[in-house]
Length: 428
Image (cartoon, rainbow, N blue to C red; front, side, top):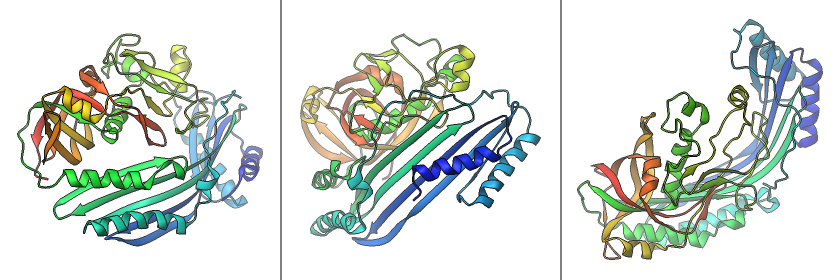
């Protein structure tokens, strides 16, 4: 994999030959190693280096872009020629703005050397623990372990220059026994942040709780939503939380800035000071990363905004780079005792938009659903389809668990939510 100095040399070669009025050069390099496993055995190793060099140019406000995956002189010449040719014949871009100037970037550390140097034997040892566990349970295991080490470089004609180095390790696995199937996953900046024994215990507990699922009718019912499920709906909530959509009247957050449109105990930020979370120093537009409170105790404080739209309305651009969802200290046991009956949901998927303007979404539960009464899990039940307006749902949060790292970019609590809207049951 190329290093930072090589990236600078590539950018300088492009800079010297590029004739455009403006340009932005993006270079990313990554070394990956992935180990797939299925039916309790290793099935595939995938590894190697990736390189992507992108160039976006502008002649006046006519833009063009191209990308390549090789850094030889002929390829760089072709990159410049392609981007400039497209720009010259393109129609004017009404949303073109000049590229970013030099910026003060935060000092961050997204790199763990031990993770970047992790070899395949060590990865297989971690997988072997999981396979041995599945064999003891007379179950079948499948999944993937991933190690990534990346470099990112961004520079513009107007003086912006930024560099980042990162690492990550991820492990996901699905276990199947008879007709029961469930999954767990986790990613982190550093491999040592993922305790495989804890992940195996989580998988085993989910599997044990799902024996002989029974049919259950749909209703509005309290649910305990575990961190993977919470993160999945949170991603879709932020998908519609941008300032421009709100100002144009096509989201539920029109005229809601600095107003309470979430629940009292809903606070979420993007932070720089949590060592467990990835914090890139800039984004691909050249916007510097800055700590931002999005929602505080239910009040909408900020919305993501691009450089173009920020300039248009006269504010500073800002973007979401991680999720720090403030939790509390309620345990699952305490949550189950605080309501007469309810469900525990491991995860959500197939989330889709029903009505962008109201914020209504639909989706399915997955990886198992448990029914509880009087503080005790009674049985597992079938999966469900649900419909919810996500920001309105936060007003029905009864209690929160401790916020825990779930992915490299997210610290998430377990939630107890009242009257979760189940609209249909499934056959699986």
